Image 1 (tube, rainbow, N blue to C red):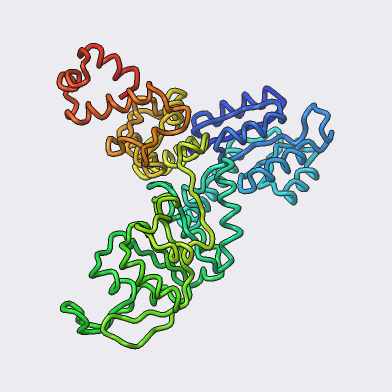
Image 2: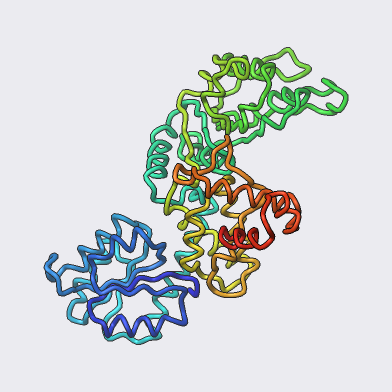
Length: 448
C-alpha cells in the first residue's frame, strides 16, 4: 500500500482534504480532483492503482447517476483498475447497482477511518497478487504502454496469433522481440504445447544441425546418446529462432530444406522425422538489408515471413517511457526493499529526452541501478545514469528526428571521450581541444 498511487474524485473539498490527510502517510501518491471531467486526462497521464469515486456531483451529466457514468468511463479505459464508490447512506441502492456495473466496492459517508484504510489495503493487496501473476505470465513490460504504436502492435498480434502463419519479428536490440514471440505463442491455438527458443545466431556451423535437428549416438565424438533437436522438442508448439539474420548461407540452406519438407533428419541417421511447428523468427537486421541475396536467401525470407511485425524503438513511444520507468521502479523498490516511490519532474524530463539506444532493456537496467543507489523516496535527474555500454543508437541513428542536431552530437562526443579516458577530465579536455573548465560546464549542461 505504501507505494500505491490513488486518485480521489469528489466535489466536496472537505472530503478531498480528509482523504488526503488520512492516506498521506499510508500510500505513495494521492491525487485529489473535484471535477470528474478531468478523469480521462488523469487516466492518460498517471499510472494508478485505485480510484475513490463519489456517486454524485454538482454537474449536468446524468444527474443522480454521475457516479455510474464516470465509473463506466473509467472501466472502459482501464478495465482492471479497482474503483471504490463513495456514497451517502441514502444512495446505497445506487452503490449496489455500481457493483453490478464494475465497481470493486463502496464506502458510506461518513466512514470510519480504519474501515476505509482496510478496504483500500485489501483491494491493493489483491491487485498486487493479480498484477504479479500477469507480469510473470502474460503482461510483459514491453506491452506496458498506451502509445498508438503499442496499440497497433497488440492489435496485430491478436489478429495473427490464432493462425499458423510464420512470423518475422523485426526490431532493434532491447525492444523485446522474444517477448513478442512469447505473446504470439500464448494467444495461439498451440499455447498448450511447448515454446522453444533458439539463439541461432550464436550457433557454430558444427553445432547448428545437432542443436536444431538432433543427432544419434556416435554421430560425432561427443555424441554419447541419442538427442532430439529443437524442432522435435517444439513439435506441436512454437519454435522461436532468434537472430535469424546472423546465420550463414550454408545454414540457411539446411533450414530451408527442413521448412519445405516439414521433417528433420538427425545427424547420424537416414530416417526423416516429421515435425509440426509454428515458426517465429526475429532479427535486428532491417528487412531491406536482409533482402540482399549475398547475405540472405530470398526464398528463405518468403518462407519465414508470411507476416512481419515491426517492434518500435523505445525513443519513439513517447509517454510510454514514463509508464515503463514507473513499472520498473516499483518492481525494484519491492525487490530491494527500498522506499523509492517516484521521479521528480527533472528526472521525468531526462527520461523522456534520452534516445535509448539499448531500448527497454537499457531503461530497465538504468532504473534498477537508480533504485539500488537511491537514498530518498524520489529519484532526481542525477540518480538516472544511462549505461556507457550504449554509446550510440543502432544503424547510425542519433535518436528521434528532433535529436538530429549538433547539440546531441556534442553530447555524445563528450560522453564517448570521457568514457574513453576513464573519467580523466584533463585527458578528455585535451583530446576535445577545450579547457577543463569548459568541459566541466558541458558535463553539467548535459548531465553526464
